[in-house]
Length: 376
Ligand code: UD1
Ligand code: UDP
Image (cartoon, rainbow, N blue to C red; front, side, top):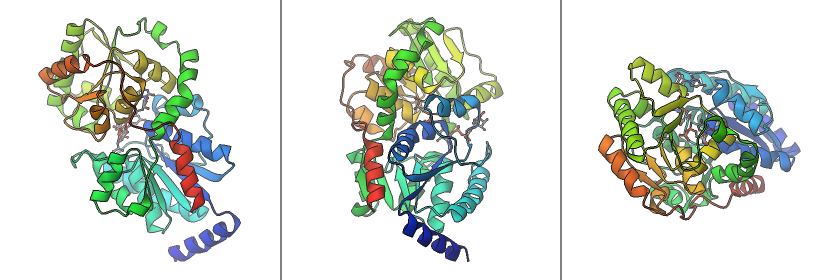
C-alpha cells in the first residue's frame, strides 16, 4: 500500500513539478557541507525542503551554523538526539519514511557518512525514491568505523553518486557501481569555504579573544568514536599533544566536541595547561583558527579537507584516512595515535612549504550537483 501511495504522490508531483528535492541533514559537518546546496536551491527557486534529524542538537553543534550561514529553518526537525547506533538509525528511519510518504519528493539528497545519511538513504530507497549521495566513494577500508559502513551502504543504494575526486570515483568503479551513475563534482566543503572565508576574515575576533597570534598555536579537534571511546588511545593522543606543544613551544587550542569532553571525564584523564580546551566554535571562527594555525592535528574528516584547501599543514590522529588526496598533495600525514609517531609526523609535515594543490574542486560542486539532479 505504501508503494502505491508513494507512486501516486510522486506521479502527481512529477507532473506539477519535476524536481521536488528533499535535503536530509543531521550533524555539524552535514549542515556546513549541505549549505552550498541549500543556497543553490534557493537561488534557482527550486521546490525543496529540509529534514533535520537533530542527531546533533547542542547549540554549538547545530543552531549556531543555521544562524551563521543564514540557512532557512528545516521544515521538519526529528529531534532524534543521541543514542546507540541501531537505536537512532531506526528512529530516524521511521520518521523519515513518514515524511517522504507525505511529501513525495522526486529525489532525496544526503551528504557524507553519518547515521542520518544511512537512515535517509535507506528510507528513500525503500520507497523507490532516487537517492543522491554527496561525497560518495570515500573509503578508509576500515569497517570498524561506523562511518565506513554508512558510506558503503549508501553508495550502493544511491542513484546519483557525487564524488569529490577522481580517486573516489575509482573506488566506486572498483566496487562495480555503474559508471553512468558516478559524477565527479568536487566537494561542497570548498564551496562553503569560499563562500564564507572573506566574511570570516571580516567578522571573526577569535584570535584576539583567545589572545593568540597567527602561526603561534597548534589547532586540534578530536571526536572519532574509535579514538575517544578507547582509553588507551585517548591517553596517548593527549600525551602526544602535550609533547608536541612542548617541542614546538606552542599552545594547543582545542575546540572540544562534547563526546571528547564526556570521555575525558569518564576516563578521568587530565590535560595540562598547554592544552586549552574551549567550547566548539562557530564555522567562521573555526576557519580563521584553521588558516592561522602553525599545524593542525585532528581526527576529523572535514578538518583534513579544510586544512588542505587553506594551506595549513595537518597530521591525522588516526591509522588511516578516507581522504588520501590530502596526503598525496603534501598537506597531510596519517600520524596514528602513538606519541612518537605524532611527533615524527608533525616534524615531517612542518618541513613542507605551505603550498600544494587543492584536490577537492573549484567551489562549484553544489552547482554541478544541482545541474545534474535537475536535468534528469
Ligand atoms: C557524529 C557522526 C560522525 C561525525 C560527527 C560530526 C555517526 C556514526 N557519527 O559523531 O561521523 O564525524 O557526528 O561531529 O553518525 N553529543 C552532544 N551534543 C550533540 C551531539 C552529541 O552532547 O549535539 C554527545 C552525546 O554525548 C553523544 C555523543 O556526543 O552521545 C556522540 O554523538 P553522536 O551523534 O552519536 O556521534 P558523534 O561522535 O557526534
Ligand atoms: N567545525 C566548526 N567548529 C569547531 C570544529 C569544527 O565549525 O569547533 C567545523 C569545521 O570547519 C568542519 C566541520 O566542523 O567544517 C567538521 O566537523 P566534524 O569534525 O565534527 O565532523 P567530520 O568532518 O569529522 O565528520
